[in-house]
Length: 124
Image 1 (cartoon, rainbow, N blue to C red):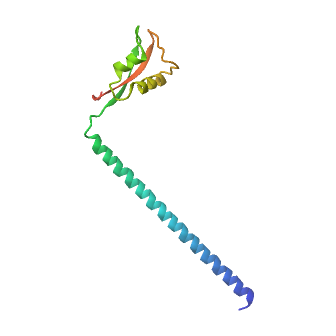
Image 2 (cartoon, helix red, strand yellow; image 1 turned 135 degrees about the vertical axis):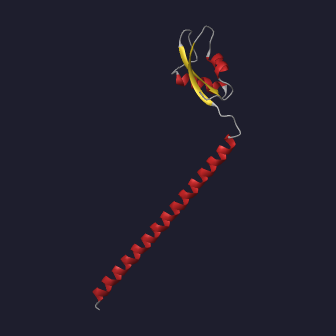
Image 3 (cartoon, helix red, strand yellow; image 1 turned 45 degrees about the vertical axis):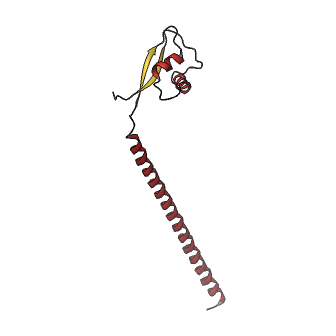
C-alpha cells in the first residue's frame, strides 16, 4: 500500500467515524427532546386532572352577555353593582365593560345601550 492510498483510507475512516459520531449526537439530542416533551405532557395532564378535581368542589359559573339601556343617573359603577356578582373587582369589571363597548371614558348617557356581562350558576 502506497502513502497516498494509506492517506485516502485514513481520511475515509475519519469521515466515517465523524458521521457515526454526528449520528450518535443527533440520536441523543432527539431522545432528550422526546423525554422532555413526554415530561411536559405528563405534567400538563396531571395538572389538568388536579384542576378538574378541585373544580368539582366549586359551583360552575357561566358567563352571559346582555344589552342594557342606560337610564338617568346610571353610571358604570352602578351597572357594575347591579351585574357584577362579586366574581371580579369592580374596577376591572368596569374596565372590561369599557373595552367591550369601545368606551374611551367612564361617561355614559341615558338612552344609549351597553353590553354588560354577568355570571350565573344556571346553564341556559
